[in-house]
Length: 173
Image 1: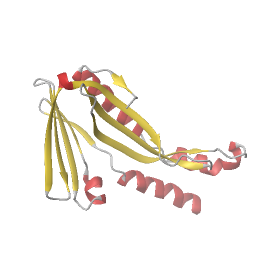
Image 2: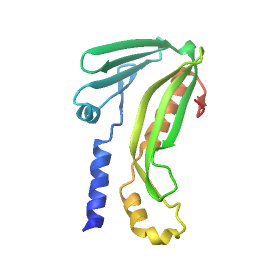
Image 3: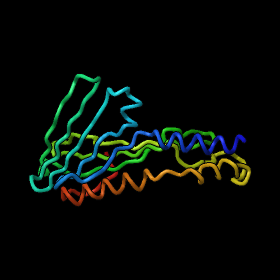
Image 4: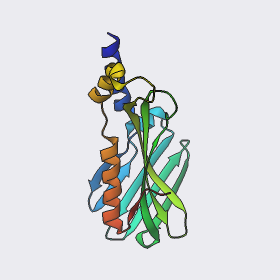
C-alpha cells in the first residue's frame, strides 16, 4: 500500500509542479506560467515571454503580488548567450530523491543574466550510501515509474531560443 501511495503522490506532485506552457501564437513563440503556478502562488505570480523572430525581440511581462507588473524588451542583438542549467536542490551525503531544477534564460552583452523560466520536479533516486543499489530497489522503481520530462522540455526550450535568437547555448552563468 505504501508503494502505491508513493507512486500516486509522485504523479500528483508532477501534475502540480510549476512548469511553463510553451505554445505558438501567430508568428510568436509564447512561454507563460500555467494554472499550477497560479494555484501555488494564489494568483500572485504570472510571467509571459513572447519571442518575436521577425521583430528580433523578446518581450517579458511579469506580474508579482497581484498588483505590481513590469515589462521588459530585449532585442536579439543584446543577447550574448542562452543559458541552460541544472541543479539538484536535495543533494547531500544521504540517499535521496533528486529535486530537479532546470533554469533557462539569457545572458546579455552587458553581463546581466535574465532568467526566463524554471522547471522544477521530483527526479530520480540517488544512492550515496555504503549500501548497494539493489537495497533500494523500491525507491528506484518508484522513481522510474513516475518520471518527469522536465529535462527534455527545458533543453528543447533552450535549443529553440538558440535557434530563434542566433545566440549560442551555455551552461555557465
